[in-house]
Image (cartoon, rainbow, N blue to C red; front, side, top):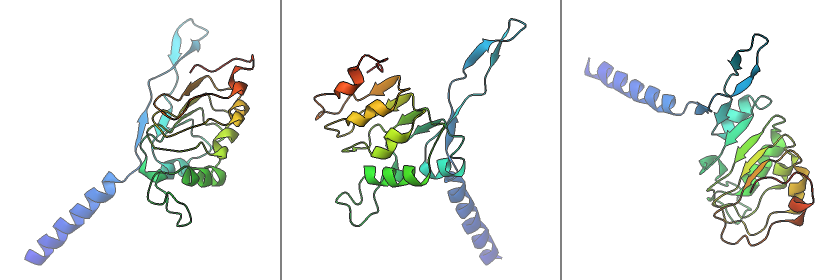
Length: 177
């Protein structure tokens, strides 16, 4: 009997460890839609904000918000990269190339100590909000202009960032900074 109880305790510990690794998603604040024909406003289903790359991979065509702030999924495992073991944009670039997110509107990469923005981010044409705050960015590429729907760009807390690309100020609707 003591062996059976020990096995049960071990099994329960394994269960709780596995349960704590389940996809972490949180609902964003509910959005109000336009008034219904009867005059009453209807609540739209709140978007799901995914916080891990592996969760977004499962439903990549439906993802509209991805919060990768301080995300351990961005820790580089590429032995050829000089930033192996650290959060790195190369890991993010490979992931976006393999898993396009056609409906992604909000992307937060805040506080990941990224040194550059991967080119794959500029292929996210539905992107409206891009949070690059508190990284180690020294430049924002001119390709940021490819994000024609961009409404908000947060680059606060990047001490090495001194200028923004002129393409952001070309007379089109400029994103809020």
